[in-house]
Image (cartoon, rainbow, N blue to C red):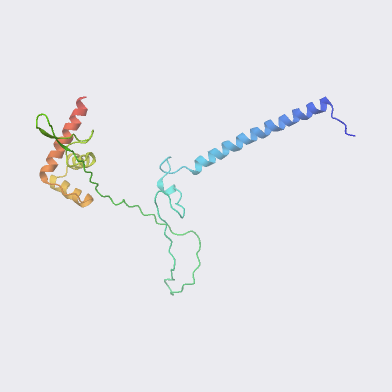
Length: 192
């Protein structure tokens, strides 16, 4: 025969359980806030805080942002030539930054030649919207204008630099044409 608890006993247990639940919810919120703060601290680096680059964590063995990690293996003692070595302490780390290989891209636009059956005139279709009638794209023109206008390189030096960096052959007269196009484009934007 089981004795059923009285209403007052159940009410007391319910109040106690609700108090425990409220305390656990408070502690959970504190723990979540602390975890969030710690994750933000761990994820800070020189690119998203005032920390210097030297304070950044080292990339893992897989590497981050395309970095590669190399370890010296098969190393022999420089004094006696023995291969019986054991690693001790933290390794000496050298991180080397390099530029990616840059290659020019060539995009071909084919403008169809049409002949009007009514009047007999020939014409070519228009270039796609935003494409100028130039052998040089907007980024190359901006680079050339920066070389000659901002860095005050001579036309020959600009030609040589573009050739050395990107393998693009440019004639002297093309530099003048590019400068004129860029000045016109900038002037249009300035006057608006």
